[in-house]
Amino acid sequence: MKISIDIDCTPEEARTFLGLPDVKPMQDAMMQEIQNRMMSSLSAMEPEALFKTWLPVGVQGWEQMQKAFWSQMSRAAQGGSSSKSKE
Image 1: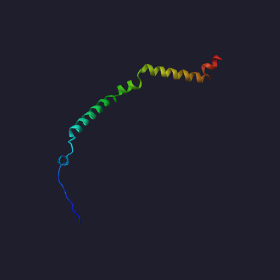
Image 2: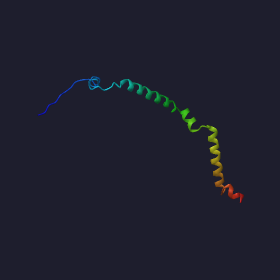
Image 3: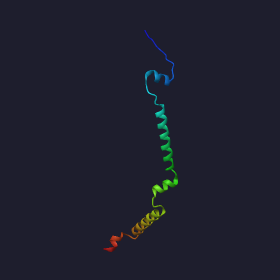
Image 4: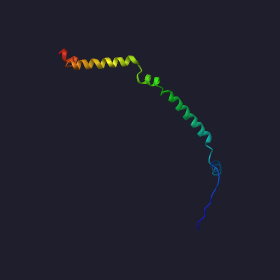
């Protein structure tokens, strides 16, 4: 013997019938909070903000790094470091 019952109701009607709470207001508030956080984090993805984050000193720091690189390369090209030439 096989018995089947089909119930045609909306999710809200089923929730009410089963005594479950209505979580729609909480879901709406959470979705709004998620949207606000995503929008605020998108502003950090702007090129100018990324540049400031990656290079806080800016162009001056980049120039210092280049000078250090070239001084190391010129010492290596001369055949040794400055500590060997002092000995």
